[in-house]
Amino acid sequence: MNTTKLYLIRHGETEQNKTGILMGSTDTPLNDHGRLQATTLGGRINGLDVDAIFSSPLQRAMETAILVFGQQTSIITDTSIQEFHFGEWEGMHFSEIARQYPEVWQQWLTDWEKTHIPGGEAFAAFKERVISFVEETVHHNSGRRLAMVSHGGCIRSLLAHFFCDSVSTGYWKFKVDNATLTEIEFMGSLPILVRFNYR
Picture 1 (cartoon, rainbow, N blue to C red):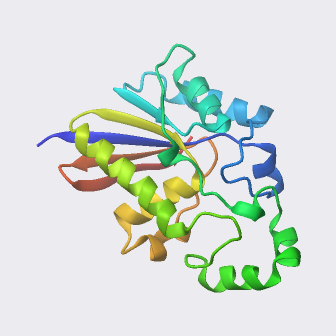
Picture 2 (cartoon, rainbow, N blue to C red; picture 1 turned 135 degrees about the vertical axis):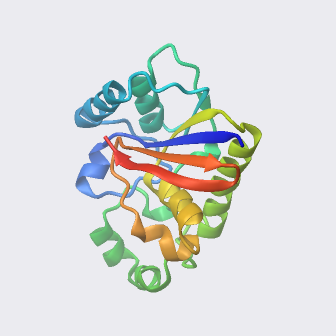
Picture 3 (cartoon, one colour; picture 1 turned 90 degrees about the vertical axis):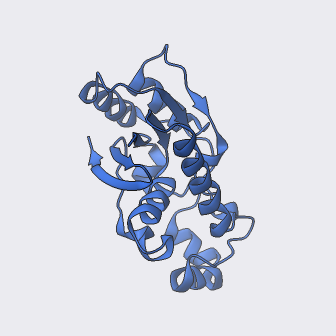
């Protein structure tokens, strides 16, 4: 039976991560600490042999991929593993959202998965694009070692999908830290969590 390895890496810290501002699909760079985090992770996993590297096209993910795997590495970008788009909430702190969008904010706190954020992506569409892309990529690369540099929401969705009853019940059970590696091994179609939040 072929064993396929999937290495999921969350990008390093940004200033918005540090201050609690939602950026979603807004393109922001790593801060100095985030670059150090990514460089450190690269040193820790030096020698990790991968057959293909995929990345969100957002610069915080691409920067991380280059710092982890090297400037000369071939990186395939795909918007399917880009972070959730928060619409009008992008660039705002949670406290600011609660003040400016009190009704929608309360709905989100009660039923986050089905709440429509003004101008934002439907969560069902988000999880579908992330999960479909990863499952198809794993399926078409049986027996290979794949790395994906992505975002917290994407990685949480995948972990909830593979290891919980549903994305709905599992999404908030995983705290994915900046510049960490999560390793999933597929024995055929069976996912096995090998490492989580490795740094």
